[in-house]
Image 1 (tube, rainbow, N blue to C red):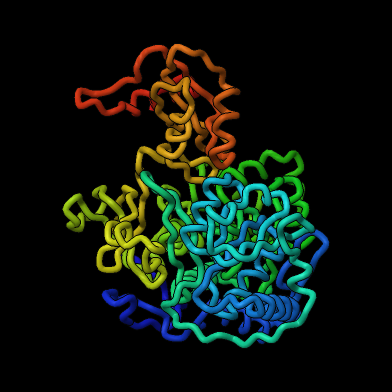
Image 2 (image 1 turned 30 degrees about the horizontal axis):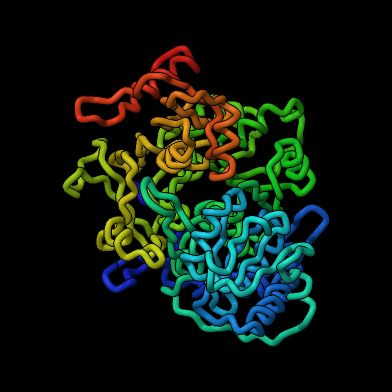
Length: 538
């Protein structure tokens, strides 16, 4: 089996989380906050963050997080308690993250595309003491009964019912660095499941540090690099692959409030961008820009991608247009604190049907339904183990027991591994849709549709899309009362994140197809919509 070369630091086996023995880097930062302390010492005058007209050096970022940490402490919020971030891509997101880490408080980033029921559940479930939020999300905040522990609401702009961020940062309050254990939870990220409520994955300091080191070393990042974050900072990719990895590297991170290909490319040229990690749909949108081939992107060295397959045509066109670019596939999840595999540099062309090989501290195996390891090339479920695997789900021992076995996370993904260790992800749970890197579990969409009185039954499937890979399509069997596409879309928009709302429908006056056991035959529906969309069945 292929392993990473000796450019990786020394490693050793260590016992963590009671029953796990995992391979760890011997020399490493000991906490999320230590990443920033080390970066400031290494590159004090270097630009850390850029967002529109704002620029912060590493010294200024350290000062800003120290000052905010003092404000949080002055409100009586202590180590181990939770603060939530209902924030978009902005510098303050990163300041809050490191302010909390300084005093041992757990950050809980939430997607700003969620709706009120989702916010209420997460804030109540994690017992958040405070929430930093965008002003335009204030109407979606839960009331005191829905989130009884929520004492403080801090808005980025003036907003009725909330303190302002400016008020919290206007006064200097003393704060000392709280010493944390590596196994302590640093961040909780809520991840949807195929059934039930979202689960709060507990990302520890140990996990965040190892994932950041995997990215930094595997991609050869230094203080001279410059990256642009185009994905949500609240997602594990934005949080780990971009924020913490760039801080570990003490290099420059440009924060885009939202992705627009033309703006992204203009920034890339002006800032001499060297690194990206985006979903394939974003690369495709860049290629569609008419002046793409004329732009000076010679500094662009690493183009990492994940979340969805990269079409071969896209790989070839990028290689032809940006000669300096090394494309690197990566595979991971919230539960693996982002990367579990990475494509070794220069190997994409030879192994473009794989997601690379397991990273240096990662153990990965493919097993059958009985948990027995399968030979090379045989398909089974991918299990993943290492110091970057989360320690479990917040306040959910049942889900933790079901999803983790002796430190291995049961991914639910079907794949195979060859003799060299290259991993293919061949399939995934059929109930999941991948819309431009956003994973959508169909049960959640179906539950929203079932709330409408005109819906007798429904089934949500993936509809092929050349740009995003897949879009959400719903087959709906109606009761007697008629309904239009737009009415159902509007109904779902108040209950779901915008990217989860069905974009097209097939209405039926007959029951949906089922097999002899009464189970919905989604394969037939997927084939039907695929044939209508592409002219061929899947």
